[in-house]
Amino acid sequence: MKLLSVAIPCYNSAAYMKRAVETLLTGGNDMEIIIVDDGSVDDTAKIADEYAARYPDIVSVFHQENGGHGEAVNTGLLHAKGLYFKVVDSDDWVNEAALRKVLQKLRELVEDGKSLDLMLANYVYEKPSINKHKVMDYKTALPQDRIFTWNDIMFFKQSQQIIMHAAIYRTKLLKDCGLKLPKHTFYVDNIFVYHPLPYVKTMYYLDVNLYRYFIGRDDQSVNEKNMIKRIDQQIYITKIMIDDTDVMLIKNKKLRNYMIKYLCMMMTVSSVYLIRENTEESLAKKQELWDYLEKSNKRLHHEIHNRFLGRSMNLPGKVGRVIVEVGYKISKKIYGFS
Image (cartoon, rainbow, N blue to C red; front, side, top):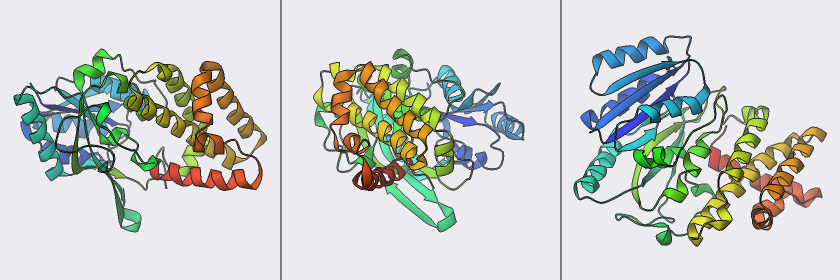
C-alpha cells in the first residue's frame, strides 16, 4: 500500500504543473500522485498522460468535465489508495528534502503501529516577483516530536491558522467523515481543513518547510481583486461552515475554541472585503451574513460577535474603519493574497 496519496487539481495548468509533479516524484514509490485534469483546454491532459506513461506505478490521471477545485479534490480523494492524503495545487510545489522527512516520519509511525489522524508541516509563501518568501510555522502552537491530542495544543496566533497547505490527513478519516467539497466554487480549501477536525484524535507536527505556496498570478483566487470579485463565493463557503457542525456542542474545549476561531476568521475575511468595497449592496451583504449566523446559531453568534475581530467588524465610524484595516492585514497573512 502507498504511504501518501497526493491529488493535484489541474485546470489549464500546462505552463507550471511540471514543477509540482517533479518535486513530488522525488518521494519515490511511497507516493501515489493523482493528477486530476478538470476539463482543461490547453496541454494539461497531454502532460498528465505523459507522466502516467513514464511512471505507471506512481502517477495516475483522471480526466473530467470542469467541476472546479473542489470537485477535482473530490475525485482525487475518491481514487486515493494511500494511507495518508494531501492536496498540492498545480502552481505550487513541495521541498524535496522536507518531503523525504515527512515520508520517513509517516513510515516510522505506521511501522510502530501508532495511529495518526493528522500530520502538520510548515508552508512557505513564495513571491518570486519580489524575491521574497515567508515561512509559516506552528512552533509556538503545537508540541513537536511526539503524537499529541487537542488537549495538548497551545495558543494559535491568527496567522497560524491550519490551512490546506499544512495538512496531511489520514485518507480513511476523510472518507469516513463524509468530506465532499462543493463544485464550481472557490475557497473550498477551508472546508477541506475544517470539516474533518472533530474527527481528529491524534496529531503530529513536523517542523519542516514542506509546502511552497506560489503567490503572484493575476488569476489566482487569493489575488485581492479576485477576492472582492468572488466575495459571494466566500460568503457561500462561510455559510456552509456555519452549518457544518454545531461547534458549541463540541465537548473538547480547545478543539471547540479553535473551530470558533476559524469561523471568526471566515466572518472577518468576508466582512473586511464587503466593508472595503463600501457600497450599499456590499454593506447589506455583510449585515445579511451576520444575521445568517445569528439565525443559524445564536450561541455561536454571541461567541464570535463578542471576540475582538467579530466585534470590530460591526463598529461604526472612524474607529470601525481602523479596526477593519487590522482585520485586512490579518486576512493578508492568512490568505497570502497579493
